[in-house]
Length: 507
Image (tube, rainbow, N blue to C red; front, top):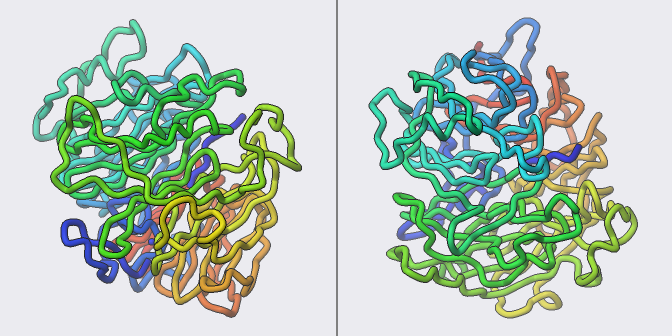
């Protein structure tokens, strides 16, 4: 079975003025630093070890689903995680569902959930037992997430406790599979403010594959997100070749404002699972996007006052960098299951750091070649910069889907060969490498002079950040880790396939 893996800088870009400021400790409302997406946190006093048996430094732990590929988000006194419904929280809602769960940050008590029935017409649209893979984003009292059915939804952070606030009012039908009898809404059900189905929306009309992986970036009044457009069940056809790969929505209504016009669809080898990032170059905001064709694109950000129009705007491309220019660009189906040669794909968020883009790229995990690299790109150029903007390229042992963490001049990233790398961020040279007990799908997190990373074997490592490799803790968890650890309010949050852990010193 194929599952969508998923995947902060000491500076972040301030919306509006968009000035670079030091990352702020506290809540973590979005995956990765906003907006540069660097997997670095400014949190302090974080645990360097924990013990599940004795409870040392374990604030709380709770059961979630049975297959979890998302990353925890912490904001407004709540913790959010996408999962499935293998262990139902509401006995009235059973079966194969996508679920976004919400817990109280203080004690792990279950608060509410969004349940999403599956698309049953074709398992490749919504892979069985895989729940909500997308990572939610919190903005004030609103929660934004993309469901397993490729719907962008805006939720009330307080769910139905303060009433059904709409304008969407049909939650009962939304949470009901097919012609089944609707279940009456209760206190544990989500309140949907608005909904946009990317499969049917004018100007988008994408085709999901396996599962939908998105981490929405909120910038002012706008939402930037990848569509996850991909192949159909034949694995040989892009059903919607003209669908955009990157879109911009109005956050208050969900209406489409802009989309890329690159027509990436025909060049997609599998799907478009990489969320965007943003940075300021030469005093102007740029949006960075890793395509399903192995190309990094830079677009001009939409104007802060941009609003929905009869015809959505086309994002203006500033530059493109082909991370694997010698790879095949046509007849891509000839390379399915070829582990030696073929096209490249980008799964990660491009990290913007000091006018550079850092990205992982390589063959498709399930169908493509094993070769993969970490690339460093000059973000200050324009046009087709494939031959002029490459600063360095460092090959890893095999497939890589993680977003990098850059701290103290060093870059940390893991690969599916079971390696955690520390590279020099300026040169790409290996400082040290550590052999893990399993594949590293999730991104490593750099925080409080430590590196936190999990593996698919359920191994969780805490290392000292720096040029000398030092293992602080090597802990076996209950099941695989596919997402990244999250640091918020002096605590670390880790989601395994089955459990959500909150770790804090002194507990």
